[in-house]
Amino acid sequence: SDIYRDGVYGSRPVVPVAPAALEAAARRRMSARGWAYVAGGAGAERTVAANAAAFTRHRIVPRIMADVGERSLRTTLLGRDLPAPLLLAPVGALELAVRGGPGRAEPLVARAARELGVPVVISSQASTPMEATAAELGGSPRWFQLYWSNDDDVAASLVARAEAAGAGAVVVTLDTPVLGWRPRDLDLGSLPFARGEGIAQYTSDPAFRRLASTRRSTPARRRPTLAAVRALAAMRRRGATRADVETFLDVFSRPTLTWRDLAWLRERTRLPILVKGVQHPDDARRALDAGADGVVVSNHGGRQADNAIASLDALPGVVSAVRATAPTAPVLFDSGVRTGADVFVALALGADAVLLGRPWVYGLALAGEAGVRAVVRHVLAELDLTMALAGVRGVAEIAAGHLAPRDGAA
Ligand code: FNR
Image (cartoon, rainbow, N blue to C red; front, top):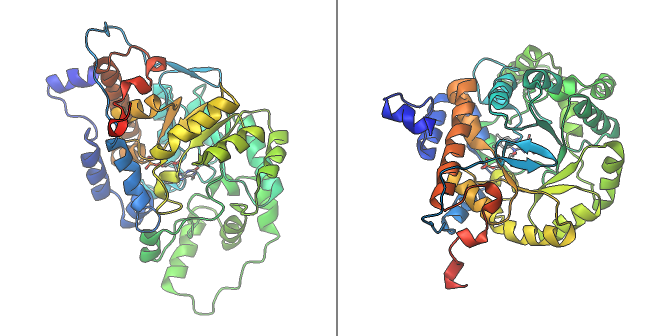
């Protein structure tokens, strides 16, 4: 591949290729607050660790003499031809990962994705209004990730804007009725969002503006702390007010949701709906019965419930449930994908595609647009080589038969 050829002639990669080195370099580059937010997980971070460890329990069985001279990563998802079975996972408040202020991150990510043709899942909590990101993307694919707002008008407005911005699907994240317990953020004494990070999708929204304008924010203390003064200044730089931030915290999620509510969303959009955050086969079945077009098996990168099972361990059961309910419904996977070999394993266990999360954020922190592009290219190059070594020419061929039977069972 080009990456090897570059290596032969002595040019160093833009960002480290080895996952651990990439992470270490990003850690050195990012602010303490940014690092805590991006790398951190819920509780004692046992699920963060479990997500990674689960991949070590699956072994690929190499095959030889299979004519792998021509290979393709191309695949089709929701009727659209894609260069690879990989999307950029939705990541909110990205401004915490880059230097240079709000609004800078998403355009860089969009340009990287556009050049690769890899879809971006635009976060509800982006630091750039989705219309601006969509403009950078041109004709390149984008999906919209929805946090189901407590306010109907805001939720409906976000979805309508996503349609207008050319989204190919709505990914509704349902593993976040409340934000998880995040000790690293708590220890720093400044929660992400507290200074208005990741609020641009809302402050640019007409339904949200109406709501925020009627809000009377809690009166400021007569002698505000230094932290409070700083937070206010940071909000002002984002064009946000205290009322905006308080309204945002009130409406960002809706903890009362049940499966019956999915009909409301189904009626409001003609776009395919994917439910993100599925870990139990019954939830997959219920999502499809309630009108979802597919699911994303995810535990939010171990950021929600700690001691939750590894997302990869949840995958096979969900795949079986989906295949039995709606055979063609896509099953996407995320939480713990770090390498091309990881993508191979997830596909072998039945995923149709994966969402890449933290690694591209590290690339962004290290080298902006070029960093995101490099990280994605490294993962896809390794996937391509892994396919060759497993005797596979196309992603549709990747199946359970390419993995060793577990625990000696056939
Ligand atoms: C996320 N994730 C996330 N998910 C979502 O639906 N909306 C969001 O706004 C965010 N924001 C977000 C911020 C940060 C910093 C991280 C790390 C993650 C979850 C994300 O989409 C994906 O599920 C995880 O990143 C997958 O885990 P790994 O592979 O990154 O460990």
